[in-house]
Length: 157
Ligand SMILES: [Zn+2]
Ligand SMILES: [Zn+2]
Image 1 (cartoon, helix red, strand yellow):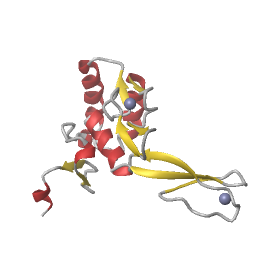
Image 2 (image 1 turned 45 degrees about the vertical axis):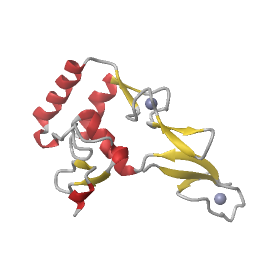
Image 3 (image 1 turned 90 degrees about the horizontal axis):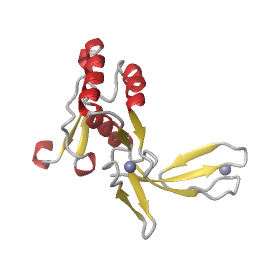
């Protein structure tokens, strides 16, 4: 599940984030920064969008190529979720469906980019048909870097 984040801007200008508000010697209060995906959710969305493992040596090339054919969702500023102003909670962005990105090209064009990346990094291939990361438990294979979203909780043993 997305996590609530607090932001602290210290008197020396440094910024830190934490999962709960903390006291600082400087006396400046922390600022509530809303809900954000946790790191596993970000990884799962990466894989779901691109059909590539979220970690590995292909990332540099993949990020470079995909950045040219996607745009940051303007509705949620790439966060995938929106903080609900009416209560302390979040909403999945309806514009991007939670991905945080929008494609600027056709399905065929994005598959061509994926194929080009896989020609150079065949081990980067990963399942893009995983379940919505919000609906399950995300586990990562340490060897391949690929993630799975477990929605059938019997599978967790
Ligand atoms: Zn401080
Ligand atoms: Zn969005």
